[in-house]
Image (cartoon, one colour):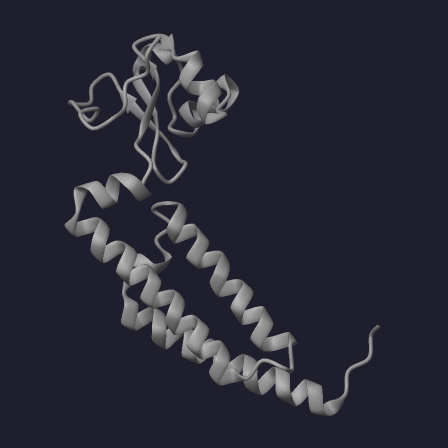
Length: 168
């Protein structure tokens, strides 16, 4: 259980270092968006990178070249998805979630909260993290496409133009 041979140690150290360098190079080529976690596809890519890296490191049946090819394939898929979503509104709507209004001007939208699985306590926590003491100071709370809660103060302009309004 706690045993490791010199040969497997050298393999893990060498392959791990080279795989890490290869991943960094591919990520630099693919630019910032690959790890931005703006939507579920970005998240899936990030998790897949970790899975591939662990497979390269721990499975001696997987070669470094196979792992680097898997990294490149993931980056290519990410590029294709983002390329299409930037150029096609229909494609973008198919793959991306919309921001959802959960609270506005003193009213919690309970149906939207239930659908999005967000509690009032979680929203209050986000309000406190923004340094806001009362809900009277809050114009709206929006669940963004990346899963974060945005707090819009009463003094803010119209940042709600692209937010899905709940049917209550």
